[in-house]
Length: 370
Image (cartoon, rainbow, N blue to C red; front, side, top):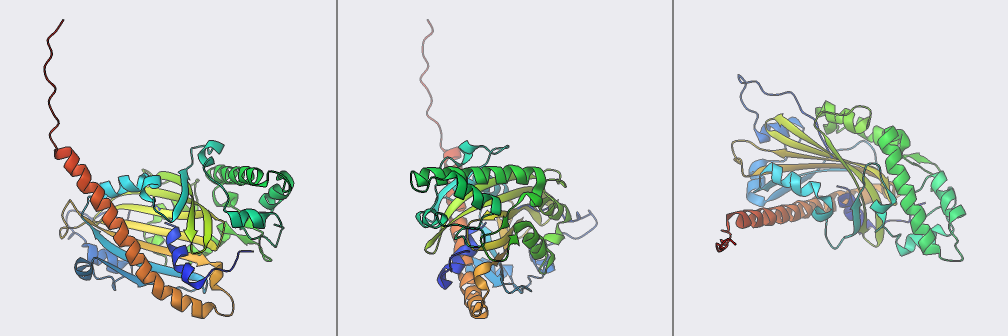
């Protein structure tokens, strides 16, 4: 059973999850090019006025949802970098996410190995709570099998931290390898709570409910939803783990990123993210990032459109409606700050790259032969 999440921390939860898209139908030579604004409006996001983005730097909007546990937010920012440069930075996920809030992070090999998670350690509160973890009553989201492993393999009266860390690392390695083989059916059914919850079933239900922006990209939709049985051509997959501060909590998560090149203006590149494990709060999460480029921005700039949908178990209960109202408002501001930070970082790195490339290298003095 997940510990209660402070209301102010719910906004941070939504930003802790940060996928791939596929290609919409191409534009024929006889058709007028679709502008970035027209494409954004076609997604039902006409309230995101790109002219206003040019003036304000970024723009965010809350989106309607049908499930009370869900928060959906869209945001857009203009980047003064080519789309390919942003994607290169994102693929270096360890460097891209480096911040004070990200305590530990790493990527998984294929197949996943224990060496991939050697730097992962359980937060102190989780370590304490796992001592008394039982099915239907556990402070960490875990499957029935994982709960049994902590009970059977950890010497809680001895070197508990070392043993518990080893179990958690093995649980995540096994999870990733099972996901790569079996897809959603290999994900956990969480038994930390009174009523078990299937991560795969929850994700499918969320994606099926409006707003269903992922359906605009059918190949990516199949790639993400049916992974690994419906691979989309040209898509690069990356799975990483992280431990991040979420208010007073530390959350361990595993995320699947899918990168898809798109040749259908104004969409240049699409990235999708699917949470495949979260130690606290998240029942399901899906992120969609689109890089848009049209004649108004040129080749050295682009718009970054970000859409996130997350189902959070902390939004239920008697005060769920009050929490949702507050969180939606705060999330809009927090997402704007998140996008602004991303813009500042990639534009700084791009400027540094261009400066280094244009700096003449000193010539070496010629040396006489033997």
